[in-house]
Image 1: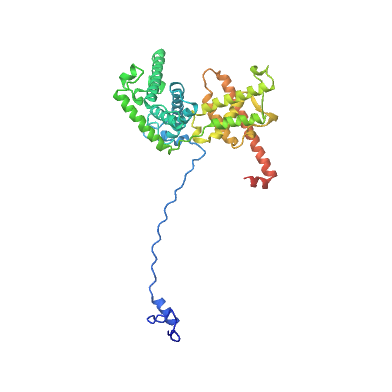
Image 2 (image 1 turned 30 degrees about the horizontal axis):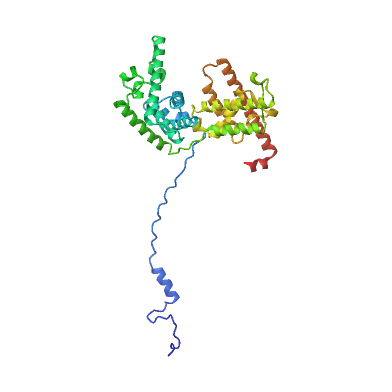
Length: 394
């Protein structure tokens, strides 16, 4: 077997031309036309998540900006409160829904009208759809026919009551619709139906159309809230805060009530916790009638309700501490804003002397201003004495 000839390379190709000299390669590269690069592809636009601002401006709500018949911020606020009372009345007494489901329906209602105008959708039909959806969300479902019948009956009773008030006033300028906020036009009632019977005929064309509108509104609500059905409420944070404060023994009565004068220390402490929890829960329920769920977190609202419940129960922190020092996760500015909005709602309550209510409102406002002043003074002293520690904390 013969081997390869001398000078043979195993990868040598006889047809392959030898490379040109270096000076000739430079001339060829200079004569070669410049290579055209493909145009740059446009980068896809980035999705920007817009975080809602902490400041809530009623002047920019859809109902206030709606044309050609805009609402004033005061009228928009009243429409929310009246419809929230309707949701609470229908959910609690007529439909027998749990408290959490009623609060969820109220949050759905507030979020819906944060993006839609009251002039576009009937608020009572939206309330029916919110109750229907909240029942499914909170595992307390109610049949659509039952929701429509009970809500219809409640609206008819309210309208009849307003008609009787107008007749008793004899010659008032306002119509029954304006007194109750319910009219045959915006409720879907025909003139014959609105003048006599309370119940609606489930076989009537009017009922069928109302049923279709409520089902359509339920889908619109789902798209409006972005299918976000998990709602946080202040009640959880409220209860946790009361239990924590009681466990650490950080509260005491500033004025012992008559029902606790004959109790021992343990009984008095139990009474204090009961009063604080009950009053705080009442303020949390009242907060659902405002737009606070659009402005602040459930934790911030719950902690402020504990503060208001303590003030109304004559309960104070021990060792002359401020309430804001007992709370973690809320600023004095936020607590002041939440408290004033709730007090504005509950101040003109029935059965309460206006003078006592106004005095309590002034006392709480004064206490908030004092806490704000002391908190600001405390921050200024801390920043001047320990600048490095303050910077690290920030």
